[in-house]
Length: 209
Image 1 (spheres, rainbow, N blue to C red):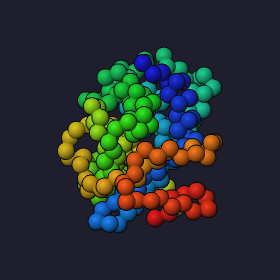
Image 2: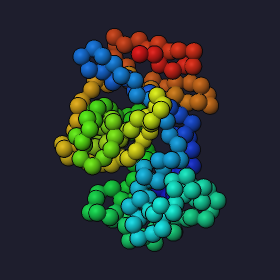
Image 3: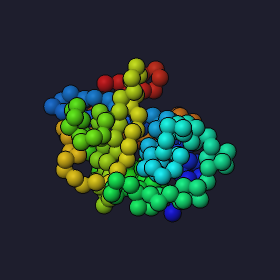
């Protein structure tokens, strides 16, 4: 089982990367660049589901939660005291124990499985507020939801679930291009590219559409 320290250490690696997706429909392509930061960690990891603890409340912002874990002030044992750590609240299938595994293995799943991008129209994806979702076609049927950050060109990861409910299916797009860019090495790993798509990059090494 992945513990909170292992997960946060691994998440630091995600923060050094940029997920780059080109999704198309009828010849028109859209660029989706995903950046990871501490702002969304608590929700991605499912900590908000621990409703019988102080960690799920507004007293602990996601950034404060991450800082306290790094300082050793919040431990795995503290999280496991919650009745909802393993079974989840609201009768959902993805309690924090499961979310930890999903988030830890996110990039590997994206790298090794077919990914289907879906554009989300307002109010079309149940209660999840997001603009895009990536459906990872693995045995767990993972859905990774993204929201456009206000005032920026980037998307933020907002939640991660395993669910094959077709009510989550939205406007499917063609996956034209998918890569993972590492800021430290300044290298890009190409995961998927349609044969007729040739990526071009600007002076900042960002994909041009």
